[in-house]
Amino acid sequence: MLLRLLRAGPRLSKGVLRFTAGSAVLLYAAMSWKASQFLPDFVFRDSDKIQSQIGGSSTYQDTSFDAVAKVYSSLGDLGTSLFLMTVGSLFIWLMIGYSKRVGGLLLNVVLIAPCVFFNLFVASKDTLVVLISIVLILVARKSSVMHVMFAALVLYISYALTVRIYFALILAIAAGVWIFRSVSLPAKMVVVLAVLFLLYALPDGAYTLLLHPRDMAVDYLVAGSPYGARTSFYNPLEPNSFFAFGVDYAYAMLKLNVPVLFYPGPKELVMMIFVSIAAGAAFLRRPVHAGGKEAVATDVIAALVVGHMAVSMLFEPDLGSYTRHLSSVALFCAWRLSYLATRPSRTRRDQIGVVPQGYRSNLKAIDP
Image (cartoon, rainbow, N blue to C red; front, top):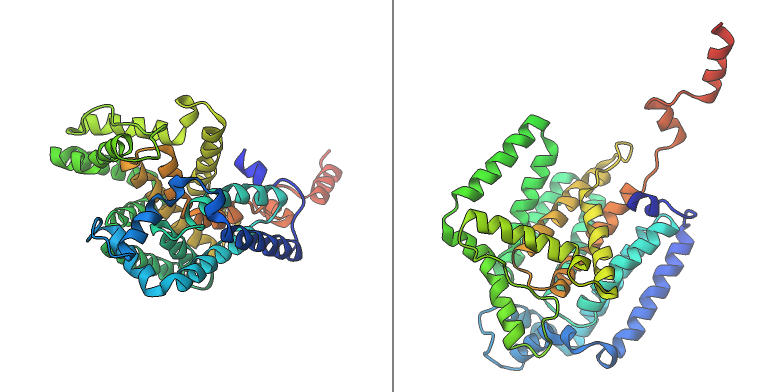
């Protein structure tokens, strides 16, 4: 279904893509000036905390908000606005540029919308993640797979040490996914068993450490947040054993990836479509004929998307937060989709087993 949509419609020329991307950037710039007038209050939740730290508050001292506040404070108000505009414009330009057909453009618009809405109208922690995704894609377009891996290591570890420590876990899971995809089937089975054994061998406190942040976040949304908690949820079981960990994680997978089962509505449907596109970009195999160093690098990028999804499902308390964090790597998904959309040429199809028409005619002539 996703591949059909990607390959639907006429092919888009570079001129059309540049005109579309330029128009979208101008629209984004115009909307940014009036963002505070039409955006809902919850979009400013993290930004307000950052601004309070910039203003001298100590409420979030030594937290990730404080670390990001120091970055934006060093830029100043004008510098932060220019930084935000630059990141947003680059993001939109690259996203649209990776559309090959009309169907792919429509899918990329779905990927663009939540990222711009949540992360690129106000300066937040996820704005920096969008910047990381841009840098990684630019590196991947010009360098080898090893350079992409090294750049990912440096960027993710730096962000983990300064802002969000769980980015180290995202990187570790991405490395595991890369290895899993690269080995043979028997080795895959060994890897799966090893991961299950490792999870089973964890002390009970480790399960609490991994999953309890979700319960704490829901407590905050219910009691302390003025923005409500319509789609938030607690872990169904106290995360203090391997069995409870499995149940809680499976429940979170359903709530966050198939939300219409629990909250049937238009917003939930749109968010599920977004998540489905991102998941398809991460999990679908790259066509064999889409070769080259760039194409292989998309496998590394896809592994990072899987890492983001896997870690987010550990602690995200509601559908909006899950979508917001996943949307910060939407550029990874668009780049991957541009290679999934590649059709094999007729010559290539002939080489992989389709007998050419003329050759079939000759066979008929000599075969009684």
